[in-house]
Image (tube, rainbow, N blue to C red):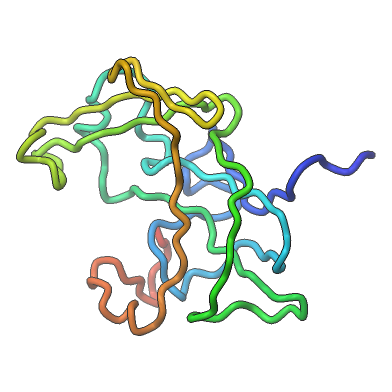
Length: 189
């Protein structure tokens, strides 16, 4: 059997499954009590798959009803954490400087779309609620590094991602209580 082509997949996702049904657990906040789901060595080239913010709750239909009624208590799904170890196997520690090169970025095959949305005032709203009090949604389709939307004609953008890291303990201590995890929690999400 031939070796697999491309970078090693360290965090897979199955888009047919709910976030809590994934082979490796997803989470929705950074906290030191969340154990790593994978390990990579300095210099490794690897791949991480992710679900969207809603874990599949937002659909590609053109209605904003799913945005209006989104359950905002179970959103912002994240892949990881991933432990990074040096060549001797010693894990990176809070405060260490890690240089990460993103070699490629894109949607999973068969899922080449995304969305931009504003939440309804009645469902928590957002920082633009005064300007957009009702739920809105624009669907975006990806082609290579570009995204276009039939809802926003004439716009063609490149897209990006965020690469968060676990904060220092001093920073965690000022995190609002609602984002903290208790030792007795049976679920992170």
